[in-house]
Image: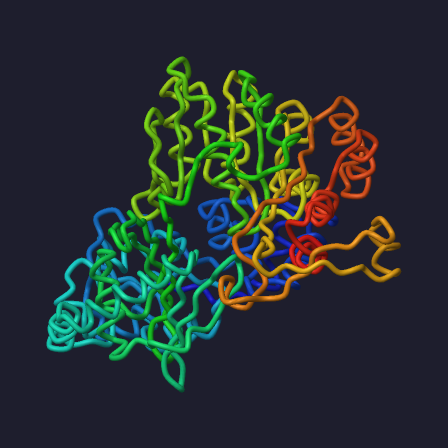
Length: 549
């Protein structure tokens, strides 16, 4: 089989997308604008934005390069004489096909790799496969048997055995237990273990802000990281790929769920432990601390039989907690409630909960198709990330289901633009949306040390404050760790869909036009809600500006 000459795909992909009508000139300009602020290649960005699936994109790549697509049926791994580490690092899979040997790659944009392979193995044809498909094949090759794959991942069998022994020794067990207990006692949401040239830095995220911990720092870090990975059922031999896991334990008299995330770095694995303290969570809308007007709107919308409710905000802004709290409000035995999450953060009796598993092919979109055949009344989608999931959510909301989900945007009106950018038809979106909420978490002033001060004239004028009325400011004391803040509270904005807003989506869905239409309906923004909390003495203007400014 003749091997096609490599083509410079990055420069030609945009033209191909234009030629095939996948993008128009304005769409391409929007993609390029996003790309300017993203390290991703155009191909990955196109998929992430929901413009194309990986399969459809690789059909285009195959057409552009002349390289055929690999179907994987009936093929087996064959030793082509390359080092295992080289194959794994470059995402190359040598296979034995019916017609002979072949090399499968997932990056047709890497002209250097293609040229090298064609020089080294000119007689061996190249095939293309989407990244996930090739990843699964490589994992099957290098990851099914830890003993066989440790050397490929940089660790020998003796090293693994030694680390396991150390991880089970009392000093290491005590270190891991102490750093988790310290996090719980500090009310930390996350624990960061960050290896560097000078050693390991231990930091705790308290009230949304990271604080360095002077002592005790973990000793014998490889053993400490191995202990954590054993508890989370992760592969301690794998140090070159990110891993995610979960730990459930009892510490400081509390049941704690811990989500574990590892990332490879030049100095060791960076580990983040997210602490989900079940004792501190009261899943009710009233307990969220949101303004009463927003809580009332949530409750009103949750009584609807169909439609789409969105909660938007950055990671760690309390979106999932708000929606979980909403679900508990409607558990009465009369409605079937099904969730699809990544991962399941809180187990709620009376609700059917599913967790996605992309490695097994259980994506948000595939799971959604299944659960819609399971006769649900209410569907909770952990996050809408792509066009396919967005379209299914909208279609479900239009066919008799109440759909709740989160999305990452900066504002309530911004969620509308995000859906349209993913390719959802404007008339479908305008018909399905019920409400969009945006929220943030602010640090709450420490009541033991906060102090009253008169704001200056510029601040009064800028924020419309009452002249001559003092406001509380942060000072710092031992109880709040000298930060001046203790605990967090939410601020939010709720965009309730009106006929005027629905019409605006169809006519001019730009952010400015949507904001103007929203304000015509007495819309209160995040900043408005934050300033109200300042007037109530719960936080500071500086904190509102940090989070919502």
